Length: 227
Image (cartoon, rainbow, N blue to C red):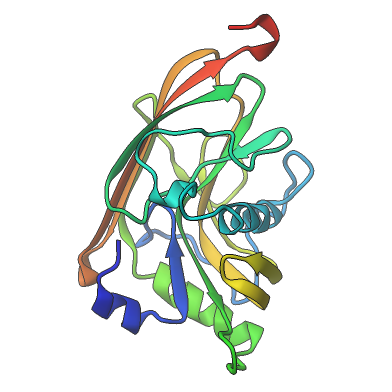
């Protein structure tokens, strides 16, 4: 969670979700997008746009960014891919249920940048804001059932991939925003087996004393069998 002075410093960059790290060897070109290969019909960049639209449309009293403990993971979800979120309330540990046939897509660390009313930053400038901030993040960890996920430059199951999204628009909590771009690290998990699973991600930006730590204790159920 950002402190007030940090919010002023990064007023053009809205930090969402679980913080994760860089200081790694991945790189992206300004305006580019890693992970162009499609999975479930969309690239990682396109899925990140869907994630932002999902989380930004949920009212604060239900929004997963502000949740802890037992949570309804079905809020706003649709289709073969369900989304998970990080935390704006400090460390969080959540418990919830997911159907057996759902892939899980979530940011390990992500930010977005956009023009507030009266501002005229170009897409290239907004991308540079995002990229510069992501480059400062360090101390990366993401595990699924205790197994660490590798950071990768190519699409593969159960790995962390960095990319920038295509430009998109929002119309939700932020109001109508015509130009939004994001940068970050994301994971697409194939559907998990029935039973109990733990997803844990942690990261830090030491220069600004930013630490986030999020645990999901997920029960995967076969709804067709009434489990």
